[in-house]
Image (cartoon, rainbow, N blue to C red; front, side, top):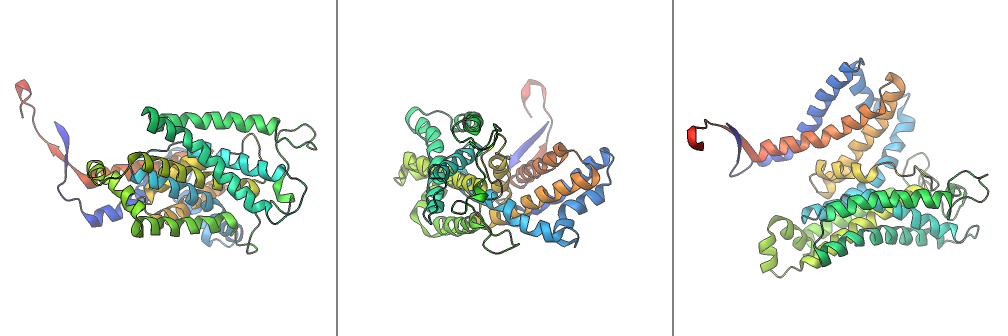
Length: 364
């Protein structure tokens, strides 16, 4: 019989190295997958991880895109990591991201074509509020009726997608768009455009907000009482209750913070790279951020690095599809392997395999 036995003291070194090991295993198994698809595995891995940064033919475009892609991942993953640390599983960040984009775009389009320096800050507040409001639904249901926040938050993603399709063809539809679904292009509305702060750098206000979120999360977790309560709730729930930590307050705080950050990510995306509300606006950032949060070990600095790595797979994956004809699904599977191997290496870091015999009667 094969069983897992918990290690008394898992190796700290091995725990710290598991993300790197997961990336290496992903490269090996991903390369095997590309080989099965009839593509050169070494070239595919090189195109995904090396060419976007160092090939002079692509780097000029790819390097700025690294920050553009990483910005929303950082914001969403930072919020999710707070809940995950406390044992609160918000799986619906994609829906909160969508609602933040809708609320943020609506705040700008409501006063179009008026120009004011207050419009963009109002969009940020509206976007954060939209995401927070959507996250409050599972928070209230969890605290009042003890419902499962995993299922509720996940189901709300599909509700948000329906609302997105509705407003794209109705409430926020561009009246000058010749009947096509989608809002006005916010990049052509100077007061609402999320433009680059430094030309050709990819650094826009969403990226700045992401870096601020990293600093905020680090200070919160290491220097603030609320951060201690979050960590204590996740690591020792009984001790947290004995210490007087209010579980309702922690649930509302963590879900609200993750929703607000996801909503801000959606708002910065719709005002910048995406430019407008469309039926297919959402791009899966909310789900990918779950991988990023765990790949970064739920630590703000780790999430920053993991987001840059995941952004690199986005850019390199698109490049590999273009140059090698790889199917898009294979790139998504390649990204999913990161989480799979991270979880697998975590299991073997915390547990060891025990072999034994099963005798008659079930005794060993």
